[in-house]
Amino acid sequence: MKKEMMKSLSAVLFNCVMGMAVAFVLGITPAYGAIGANVLAFAVGNFMPAGAAFDGVLKEIWTGEMVKGLRAGLNGAWLQSVPDSSSAVDNDVIHLVDVEAEPDVLINNTTYPIDTQELSDGDIAINLDKFQTKATPIKDDELFAISYDKMARVLDGHRDSITIAELQKAAHALCANSNTKKTPVLKTSGAAEKDGRHKMTLDDVIAMKRKMDELHVPTDGRTLVLCQDHVNDLLGTEQSFREQYNINREDGTVGRLYGFDIYEFDNCPAYTKAGNKKNVGDITDVGEYQASFAFYNKRVFKASGSLKMYYSLAENDPQNQQNLVNFRHYFVAMPKKKDAGVVMMSDYTAPTGN
Picture 1: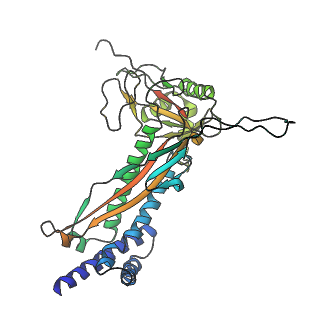
Picture 2: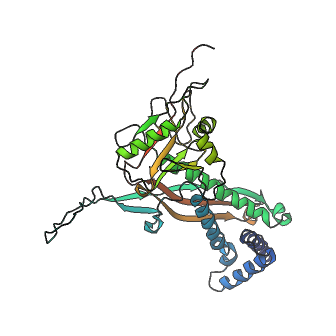
Picture 3: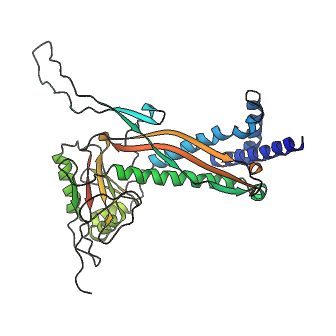
């Protein structure tokens, strides 16, 4: 009896904290969140097995808020204009039909019936990437004493970490592995700095435009994502870019030049001196730097899968007496076709002398 009472009290406390955290995020009076969470717990309990009501009562609520937060984070960055194919996801797998040819267009046709033309289709199954945060411990003693917004801040941290990781993986996927005719990897042409890295210039931006023109990429819907080195290069030498960069833009862009919507990103993929893309998280060596990349929105896609919240209560951890919370989310962003964009890496000349 005493054990059940302690379990119920712990559940009520957990519901209060989580309810107030959700209310804090939504801008609602925290007390209403606490009361509403426990009311919902008892209501759900009538339809759930014994002991299940409290343990799972707020997982769906908070998961929903996490989904909104992740969507806002991804849509507020350079991925915002990329078509969302989440509706095609099934069990964290997406099936895309890769159309390798486009139908011919008849102009002023006078011959009927119109000829048929079969397109080469292929069903491609793509597993979404799995992103998991490490569990955050919250001591039971701390849980009794903290204000309602502590849990909100902890969970916001998980959301931000997942968003950063997903953007980094997306940027990596949208960049070519190496230079080919359909996946150009160009090198900057500006002056070399002391460390040997050649700066980016507006001529390099024009070179990226020219390559996309050669790939017959439509001019409407081109996005350029600059790494921080290249942003600083342009800020230091190009007044037109500097003037646009200083404008506060609500959509997140830092400028628009030569048909590109331009964004800045601090986790662009790095390339070796030979022009090969490094793996996500690899340490850069001498002469290896992050690259900038451009893509055509309609030749890439993004998709979100399931999001699951995991938590364990301190009552199940007698030794540490701490609660644990973490999340798992499935997401992918990648090109539909190889000729989706262009990469601009920093050229390198080894310094001579001291």
